[in-house]
Image 1 (tube, rainbow, N blue to C red):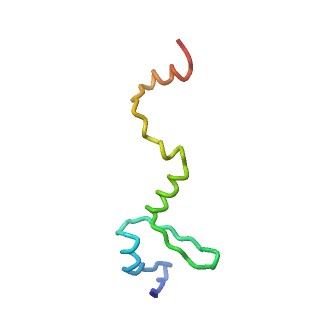
Image 2: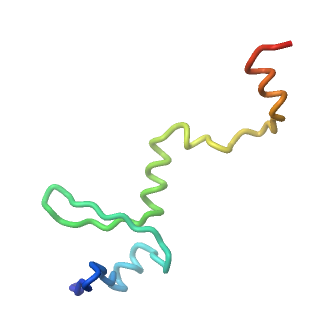
Image 3: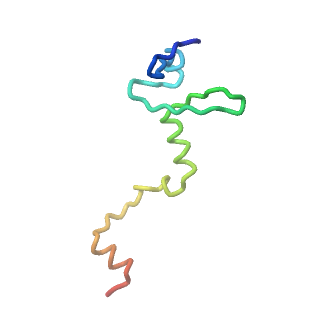
Length: 81
């Protein structure tokens, strides 16, 4: 599938590609160049999921089931009585 680049460097992603990647208006996309010099288009959502899997801290961020009050947490961390 071919497309033409505008004077601003913009291209339209062909509909079969948008459908295959489930891209909607406003979707994030990421471009990379592989070892063969080919441009690869990634869905930003898919890349975000992959990054989270590799970051052990991001994987558990926001998962705590204890609602700490700031004063109580600071007391615990500082060890003050």
